[in-house]
Length: 595
Image (tube, rainbow, N blue to C red; front, side, top):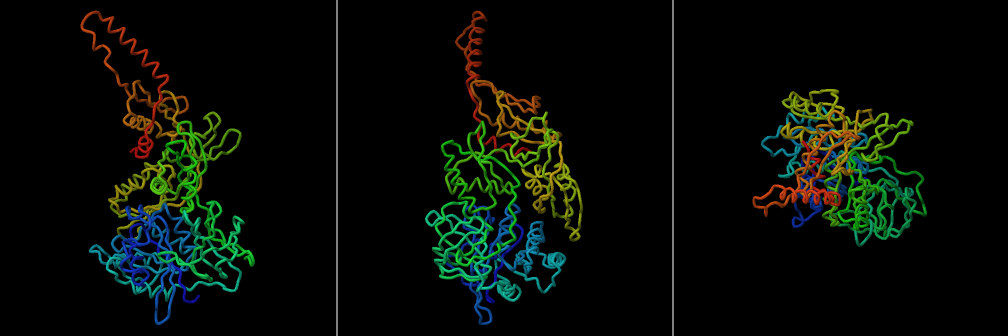
């Protein structure tokens, strides 16, 4: 065990984690030159196209240092705030972390938040200054920021470049000399922690685990403590670029197990794995339950595909433990699922993965957050969907979730950033100058306000320089109303929103205007209305497509024309009673992009 090192790579989005991981794989000859491609560990098409990491990826490398052979288990983690749950799981399986900071951009909000996660688990931190080959690199200034943040010495910071390969050798030496070997007793009963799982259509469910104590042999009968299920270990092994089968995995190592599990709900991330013959007494701690922040309905376009969608969601949940879903039905869209996501990017990625990996075309409703409604009878109801909100007459108060936001930006953009936060009902808390021209602003903002377009706006007003990170806080009482959208008097529950009373009129007007552009014209007038309770606050009309029925009348008496127009009017009225309005998917998505 003294020659095993388990470590992960943490950094802000786009600071070069995956590129640096490629260089480490190259240096240790884990991957041949022929197999190497950009972002080797990112195996999903979406990750490659967008240049972001969505899943953490574990891989084992062999390295020789001073004539001794070492086994290095590396986990590459995502950098985006929406995938911080992946980072927390990876950190729980490691003893050390490489903290990568871009030498041109300096420390950003997500770097700090991931660093705190690592420090809470007592990980050994190795600071690395990446992208040193860039002409805009500021090594002196950024080194000072790192020293202020983690209190290390200047000589502990390793200058590196994922592109040119500078400093890779120093990083490997630092991993071996600074990161402690895992502690554990090989003789003790098996105690392993499951930190990830994937679905394979031929082999069933593959669980990834880290052995803390004891050892696991091929063919052992194992038990998942949380679910109480027992299986035989048909195949166990280690994670190279491809899976590599082994006969035994001992304490301190990271591996996978295939045991013919078919049901998604029988494997829980964070569960403890042990043997049936000699079980361990205590379970592994250090996993918090994931808290979804954004809720949206996902519905199949064809109602018959409901069961297929359920299957697809179950398989996706295996691969992404932060997705939560439960069945719900809507008058407009039929049967579907109410899903919880960690943020808007997470929601977008899930929708895209459903389409690509499972060929499911889905309709997504307007995302919202969960509220707590207090009724006159002193009951409190958790409201995940605006249509669950009790009537105004029965309500006393509604509470909404707040978050503590950290924004790090250049000093030039402090004014516009503050302005943006205050228009989003933010409460200013603190302002700290990290260096002479980098400021950290702290705000308390309602989560509902940042769900839609806050991040995009923040990036555009700060010319891409601001970085944003948040932690959930408590629920607070707010003056919220339910805004309904009516089409020809029928409520479209998928477009309802809970919104602050001060913004409700402008928001209602914008939605109506947007829908008027998007709903195709019919043979009859369509009234689009926004209502709060029984009060209509905005209205737009999609005019009917009309045939010119008077074209055949030349001159003559006006009453002939009037008779034809009356006849047409009656037809339109009848048509309006039987006609129904289709709301295109673009209308649901456009509501998110309202300015």
